[in-house]
Length: 232
Ligand SMILES: [Mg+2]
Image (tube, rainbow, N blue to C red; front, side, top):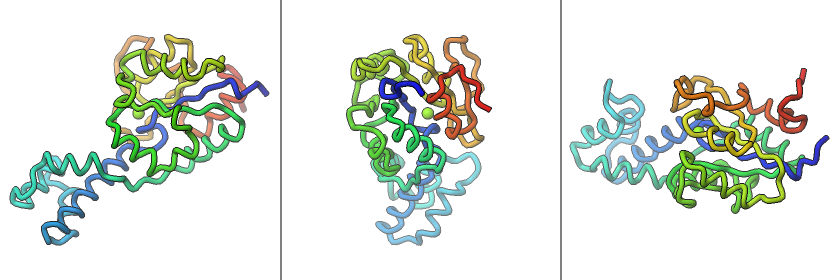
């Protein structure tokens, strides 16, 4: 096998290591329960309002109406963004990260979003076990999102001893163009039907990943044996 200590594998977070819809649901439930307690209204009712809002209505608009305007939508969004989500790292993500870590691969995270929200997700999922803090790159912290080359260049400068780098993501609009440009291998995890952002986009070739996988369970072999290896 190759010298894997010189291989960096960087992951996207949302809809790659876990499903973002689970975070969204966690946030809606948190807001519904917190406001029910504060306003002394039945929690079953507020939960039902956010999980099954009237057709065409955003859950927070529906909750705002249900509470007769007692709490602004802006305040609900604030609570949502700060909440510590209830999330479980999917089994395939855990298996994949366990295998890569055990093999000595360098693991990194490059994600876009707000500081508090992304770090709460990272902690809730227990990802600090796999990723050293210095290899966790959140756009709000580094000053650039993935529509810029800077997050990728920054990760390269943090890992000068690596001679092979990979990025694993889900979003062709921003996940693969720059790492490909820099000579990284790129892997797209196919949407299982639950992704927030569509993968059906019409973009120039440079935006697409070098390869697509259906499950993170097939990633370790690609990394251990190289992108061109055929594994039966
Ligand atoms: Mg994503």
